[in-house]
Length: 167
Image 1 (cartoon, rainbow, N blue to C red):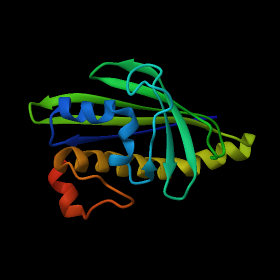
Image 2 (image 1 turned 90 degrees about the horizontal axis):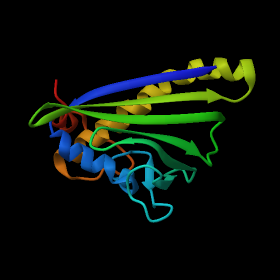
Image 3 (image 1 turned 30 degrees about the horizontal axis):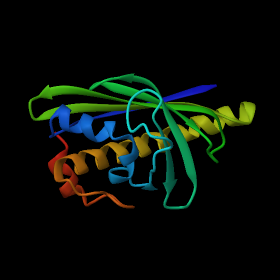
Image 4 (image 1 turned 135 degrees about the vertical axis):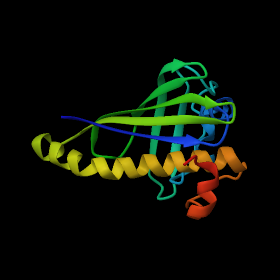
């Protein structure tokens, strides 16, 4: 059974600036709280076929490859080489201009958990967890885009995040 989870936030930064951050495919550790480092696999840093190896603070890792790409708008990645109990997982980002100084960024994940019927039940329980992961990642993106300060392993306090996120 495929599970779908999506989240969107409005960020007080231009769509061009946010896109430039997302398009630096090897730089995800700057805004994702779980990622310690994210070196590229190969020479390509953005666009279709770009690959990265994300190492998390708990020392687990995942490889990701861009499989769909619309310049200055969106991309979709497939996750490979991971230790999670997944049969398959894809994730995507979309950036939409709201004003000259703000944009909406949406993220989605589609995933299938291993283990048949038990996996389907696990997947239903994982949806809120995945939604929380998305919210933290997008909040980290907003904070980094707004301040230029990398996230590290924890998000800054809510009042600092609030400046970057439109209400």
